Amino acid sequence: MDRAKGDVLFGEPGNPPRLWWVLSGNTPERTTRKFEIRRGEGALEPASAVELLLTPRTLDVSHGGVEVLRYNHAHVVPPKGVSEDYTRSGYIHPLFSPSGMLITEDFPADHFHHKGIWMPWTETRFEGHPVDFWNLGKKEGTVQFAGFDSIESGPVYGRFKARHEFVDLTQGPAGKRVLDETWDVRLWGVGGRKAGYWILDLTSTQRCASESPLELLKYRYGGIGFRGANQRSFERGDAVLSGWENQTHFVCGYGFIEAMLCYSHVSSLLRRRYTTLVPADGQR
Image 1: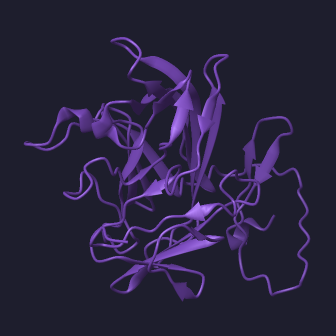
Image 2: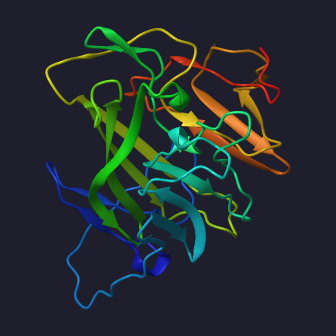
């Protein structure tokens, strides 16, 4: 690795263990770059490009000293005049662009249950009855924070793993745990304010919490949700979407002079499934 050019190795334990680094320079299309790892002496500990700060209510993530996002691990209570049924934890808001523009929204007046970046299922069946984890006002289900597995700052990426519980609220005062979910969120130490972009990965892993399965029924929305801030439009590929349920590889959200591009990983359950885009006026 060429430390003079800014290449920094970061070891990740596991089976198998992995090495991560941010490449310096440019890699032309259809070319190959070879790297050699050598044991060195007196290597300096590089400064963290991505910092994570845990507070009593949030986990704040910054890149080069600039705030990028906030993960809400404590319950967030709705504003005055809104039912406490919309209280939730375990989601990302706010998310900012490199220039500081707010990208996400929480408790929007038209949909109080929308939560920045969040992950609820909508039309499901559990132990013979319907449970809606998306529409909190129905009081059927919710998703809540259950703990952190890890929080890491670093020169190559900053990362946190958070556990969530999908809870069936119709079963007793405390409800019944339906799914156990883990979010693995990484903000990569590339780009930044001057470069004008962030790279963020979010991986959701879900398992049944008991021997009872959760059936995911066909519906026009559900799963990973993104509530964009006002005055933001959306595109699929090179075609502007004006309706609902559009099959897509990626979604682009843009507003003013800034944009956000979302890709689904090839191994994702949601890959090639339908993407629902809700028009600003809420009409189909």
